[in-house]
Length: 67
Image 1 (tube, rainbow, N blue to C red):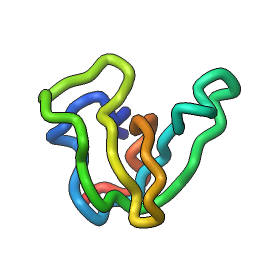
Image 2 (cartoon, one colour):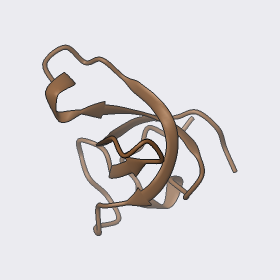
Image 3 (spheres, rainbow, N blue to C red):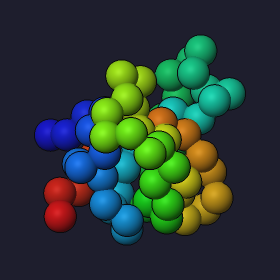
Image 4 (cartoon, helix red, strand yellow):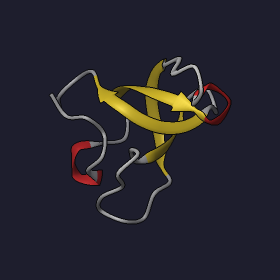
């Protein structure tokens, strides 16, 4: 399973779990579908930053659904 640190593993419309900025301390994950990929680089050690269809922004921790 992809861990969300490589931009190539993440596609628009894919189901992922993200950690939002305010949840970084607790590690609470938010599940949703990717609306926009915000990180420009191909790799980020803390996870690629995305916006979910709900408007929430965070770094991808798990890719739930493979396309």
